[in-house]
Image 1 (tube, one colour):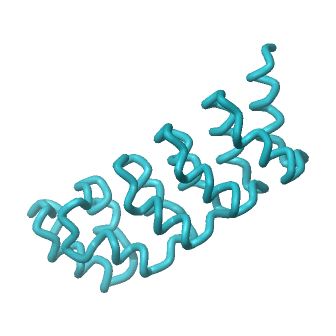
Image 2 (cartoon, helix red, strand yellow; image 1 turned 135 degrees about the vertical axis):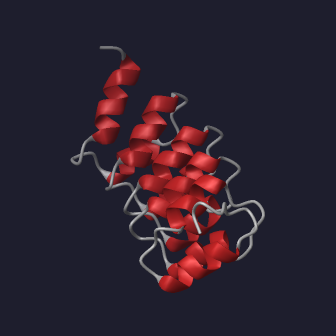
Image 3 (spheres, helix red, strand yellow; image 1 turned 90 degrees about the vertical axis):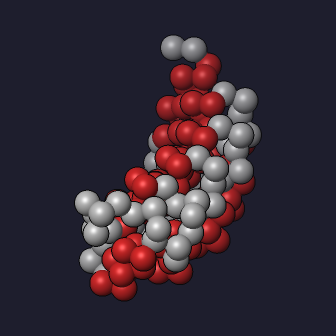
Length: 140
């Protein structure tokens, strides 16, 4: 086991302190930062920092984290990576205001996200999706 593998294991552990997760969040190794981003014990402040990571897969891991703040979800809702945006939509803590960022005729909303939102239990969300010019007839 090399040093990066060991750091990744520490970053994933529920027993790793928030202070040490903060140190690991600054690691140069992508896998270590991804592991910190996945850890549900990672603080909202560290997730906010990792939401600006240069690697999309770190940002995607942040979007999947259940401890993410509304403000960080809002930042990631506008991410250039469609995969990050999809995981924002899939996050169980996503507030309605962020869903509306995606559906209110936003020309940058990907078809993948619109397809996910077309299945939302809220009639209001599905109505906004149906009005989006990118939505295919098949989904409507």
